[in-house]
Amino acid sequence: MDDTEIVNSAARGDASMVGGPDHNMTGGGYTDGQIGGGGGTGAGSEPAGATGGGAINIGGTTIPIAPKKPTRRAGVKPQPDRPMRALFCLTRTNPLRKLCIAIVEWKPFEYLILLTIFANCVALAVYTPFPNSDSNSTNAALEKIEYIFLVIFTAECIMKLIAYGFILHPGSYLRNGWNILDFTIVVIGMISTALSNLMKEGFDVKALRAFRVLRPLRLVSGVPSLQVVLNSILRAMVPLLHIALLVLFVIIIYAIIGLELFSGKLHKSCFHNETGTLQVAQSMVPQIYVPIE
Image 1: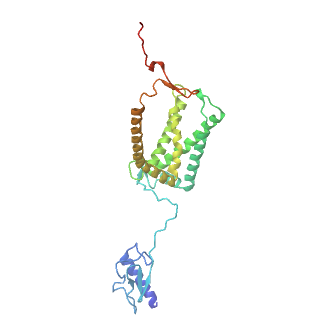
Image 2 (image 1 turned 120 degrees about the vertical axis):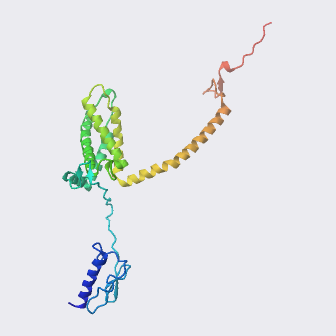
Image 3 (image 1 turned 90 degrees about the vertical axis):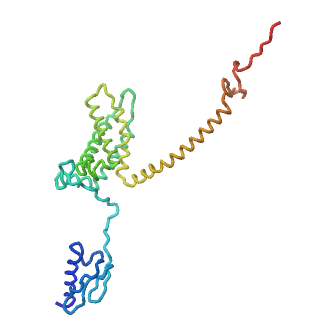
């Protein structure tokens, strides 16, 4: 064994003792002085160790080492916090929960949900309402397709509830405002469908079905860039509200001035289109009484 191999083995041994199991020779730089520390030398060699600031001193030669930065692929969402238990009974090692986590975090599944939301928007645009509960073949087909949309959205909601939990812990499903919107739309859709099938007469579900127009908002929950835009618009509404109050105040001032200047001027009067004159009702003309001798 030559001097180089002895120095390398000593450096590795001292690095493991000083840095612990989380540090290695190619790590992100050492700040605790030299690794060799005066005792970790090999036969016929100088003390080997790190000089701090991301450099290693071997045989009197300082070799700088660039720190490794954690790499993150573009477009990859950070993993949400997962509790130890979901719904009080499903642990992280539960096969059903692991399957639900794998499905809801699978990228093609997200694309499938976005495509389903877009198709639902098209179906809502094609639907033609008729008076007196009338319908046609197109509306009947869309009503059947509505069951498919409801099943897909309900399955997504249930899998996310199993994967992330309900509401009692950080990172759960209903701790996100957009998920609350999705959950509300799914629940209202299930209630309206159940009531329309169970109580076909005597109950009108048109008011509940009107909430289906909120489904296009689910595109916002599926596209993070749209969330940024919508949040920016909502935050800009507060200063815009102040401007609207100022404009309303100016309009009220001009309305008061107009009432003071023109109040009663056009009372019981009309404009003649042919002659272009303003005609006043006879009751407004003062009557002159001439005494009879």
